[in-house]
Length: 265
Image 1 (cartoon, rainbow, N blue to C red):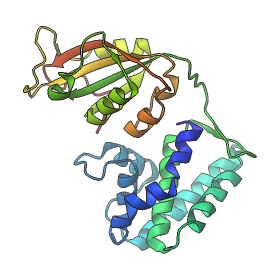
Image 2 (image 1 turned 90 degrees about the vertical axis):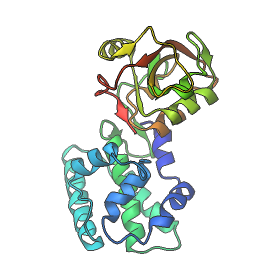
Image 3 (image 1 turned 180 degrees about the vertical axis):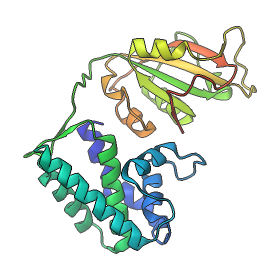
């Protein structure tokens, strides 16, 4: 997660529009808030939500008072760990204050939503170091110039418009990411290793009316910031400017076996 992406997570207008219809939820508000923020509010299998809630010990059906107690425990642990590691939390605390001060309908439910946003940022940013001074988050070992392999599983009706070796524009890549039920962005060797585990129907043509899922592997130059992103939103916002993705593999899947290492929507 880059500094730009973390800032996007705190986009007040975007967040308000997403959460306002759910602000009256009384049970499981913190869980629901995280589900909305990561884009899984309609999902029957909210895997990212569950990973975050398991990580912080958040339960799906607690009332607001229990949510607040959970949040205080989590916040206490975060501060304790940060102080022991010598991490300056001034930036983080100021960001919370900024979020709260910018909303006019402040109440306990909204505070829970704000905290949910912070927890999502912490979860996806836990491999990075919070830096003091200039509101920076510096990623470790990220090189934007690195090439990336974007691996998607999309319906045949969508993949039918893609051709092997085709160069894909940024808009086309965004459309494919939006339509993907499984996705992964990684380096060349890892993509090769994971691809070998897929049950591919190499001799089968992609038909627009087929119910098959189709595996598409796309090579992206300078796609280093996309590698290991766990949410479609961050794949899209980290696409390089003037990107042209090159289709390296386009094949029907016999079934969904071998997709355990993919992110699932």
